[in-house]
Image (cartoon, rainbow, N blue to C red):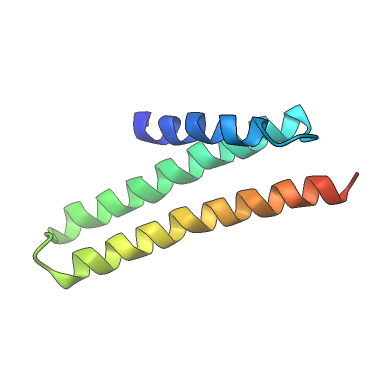
Length: 89
């Protein structure tokens, strides 16, 4: 949970630096980042515990790549939400 909260906390200053974003969007985007980040990592850890994959196995690295894809997809969604807020002005 701390790891996910740190990601949200680090996203906040970057969002706040953008001019013209409504304060409600800050909360929505950061909260979404924390919730998504937590669940992505939680799911990865659950699968690793179940499968016992290690860094010596290709499955581990495929899962790691998928995990990173999901995290980057969150940033894409955050960007779309920010652009959508600007387009409503």
